[in-house]
Figure 1 (spheres, rainbow, N blue to C red):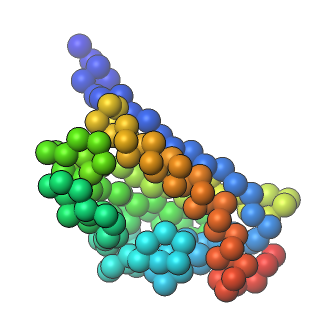
Figure 2 (tube, rainbow, N blue to C red):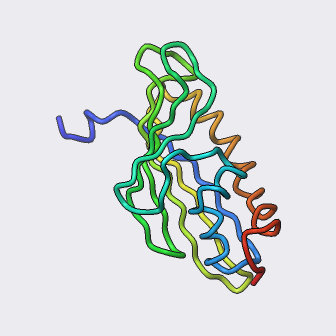
Length: 158
């Protein structure tokens, strides 16, 4: 048996959106704690520096206290921002089950502005099916909605 046969099947959420803004403007919205709090959740202890550990707080469930533990994994200014997203508890089924995933934002300059691609990867099936379903819906609303936060005070339109 090879290693891939031992690994659980996973699913990824992918959201791709083009914004009429410069990569630097979107970058600010994605990597500034106060702005993140406006479009996602308020991060505690956040800095866009590899190795930085920070948390988000959401609705608790069962044995899980609702804390999402994150760690910045990669920062390439104006191009790529990656962090671990971990939470849940082994004892929970459905909402609040153990989750060990990675969120990647990639920015690419295009003639219309900037293409932002979000990939939230590593949802194990079937244990993370509820999280995958809920977060797929969430990211598909949050990412396009970023334009309201860019236009509303993150910087210049470009």
